[in-house]
Image 1 (tube, rainbow over the protein chains, first blue to last red):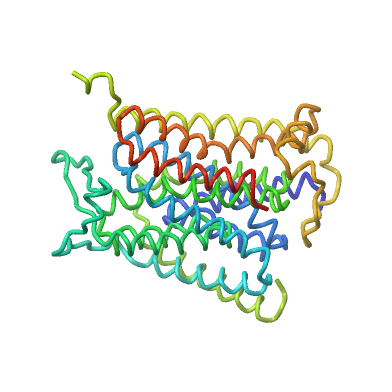
Image 2 (cartoon, rainbow over the protein chains, first blue to last red):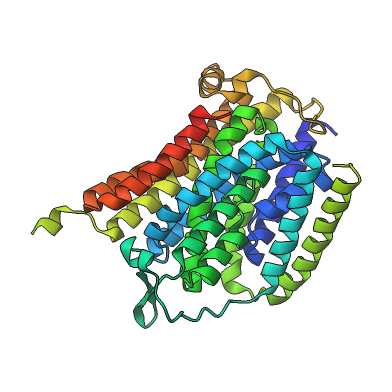
Length: 278
Length: 127
């Protein structure tokens, strides 16, 4: 296989991955790494490097639309980005210091978590009794548009959310993914932010978190232009089309089928890591 | 009356949205142009990504990438496009600091500058 065929094939598969990532709400990143390593036999470091730039492209593209619609809470995003970027720098440092096997296992576990997360439907976020003093202090409480007009909301458990975000950032830096599932968990489970706000604000933060990771990957040479080019262009196209198709489709069954596929990939990655084949 | 000269969150959101979109489109275009060159020049070679090897230092520093891109080397052009992509969220953060300043929100200017410092450390400082 020469570079031309390899590149076109990679582009096509990346577009498909981006499409499915957008449809299932998993995002492109967490799916790309197993596809690149297990299907194309790409070294894990190159795979992670190509993934992180794709994550920046898709999240920034989507964030552009969400921000303008007024769902994103830019103050929550900005404040929590302190945690995610610091976590990402730490994670990227760790990547150079732990063995590939460990990275493979952590990645597999993260995949399993994402698969489980996509099984869940919209979480029911009941407000807590006691509001958090930090949320008023940091001006995190906000409002978002609904068909019945602007709806206001309170933000709870800010320190817990901040801590979870640091962990999400570290996973991002270690694995080159956006760790959107983890971010949404922190925002809606810990901080009780409404679903529409938590998903869009999570996406808003992903680009900045991935940029903190990418700077370090870039200097280490994990981002190879020949590999990242078709992957980034493919994922960007696929996820844009996926986001458009999502509006017209019921993705319940697709998500169920897909979580099974991801779970299988996760187990394969963990087994490969344990047997030293990664 | 003072509020009239100040920005609102809504205006800030619109500008940030446009900035992000423009950055991604520009970066994708540069990567695509570099990619087409790359396939013409190297299309018949063999891909080699099975094991990681240290790439030339040119692809790993901002200066090196700029030099390569200006010399119209295809891999340099792609890498320059990818660099533009990485800079898109960074410039969004830098712009937010400006926006919060214009809104008169000092606390968020500080918060935003902390994030910007971490990003610049990652891009320029750490290895």
